[in-house]
Image 1 (tube, rainbow, N blue to C red):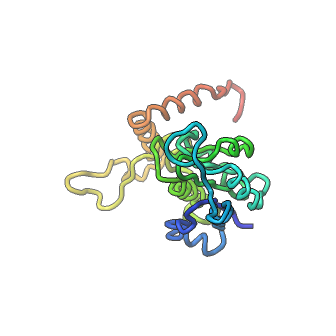
Image 2 (cartoon, helix red, strand yellow; image 1 turned 60 degrees about the vertical axis):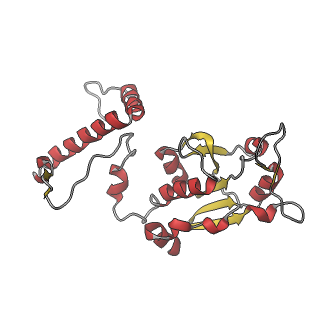
Image 3 (tube, rainbow, N blue to C red; image 1 turned 120 degrees about the horizontal axis):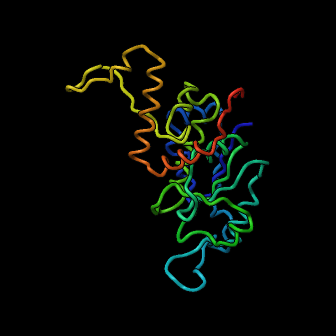
Amino acid sequence: MSWTATILTLFPEMFPGPLGQSLAGRALENGTWNCDVRDLRAFGLGRHNAVDDTPFGGGAGMVMRADVVDTALDSVSRQDGAPCVYLTPRGRPLAQADIRRYVAGPGVTLLCGRYEGVDERVLEARSIEQISIGDYVLSGGETAALVLLDACVRLLPGVMGSAESSVEESFSDGLLEYPHYTRPAEWQGRTVPDVLLSGNHAAIARWRREQSERVTRERRPDLWAAHLSHSSSRPSVQEGQSL
């Protein structure tokens, strides 16, 4: 079966959106993945298919009802190992490790919030993962869902042209990626580092590792600290032992 992304949203026309183009679009056409979009309004209540109501305790805005979201989730054929994710700035930051975990399973169900969010009770009752793509507020979870799906689809088997690309890119080992260069070798007085023109693959590998560490240390001290902590926690290889 294809890896399936089930999206619960009030704006189904937003999908597949940009994921219908380029590599993700071709993978969608050839059946590598499936985009199953469900309109939350179809599960709404009353003549106007209401999906939200005013918050208890007062305050501005509206809250998406627990009973409506619960009914919508019941309509989804859940497969073992397919998590349900709610996109929200209150969630923990999305990481590449999460993407690899989602891709390793049969798919993922994404709940896209709107208004002031979703009634907390359904999130707790369903043990829904709460994920954020950054410390800022969007109009709804749809854009965040597209980001998460783009990161997933590109890792599906056969989507990317080179398997090495996903191994060497940013976050694959907790570091940011090294700088890239191509022709011409000199541009506006700026030259490509000599080591990249040397043909010495061992030296190139060392340079790229050093650059990854430098860029991470300078631009993402949080990632660098985590990398150092992870490296120091690895057991050392004693003399006579083998890896």
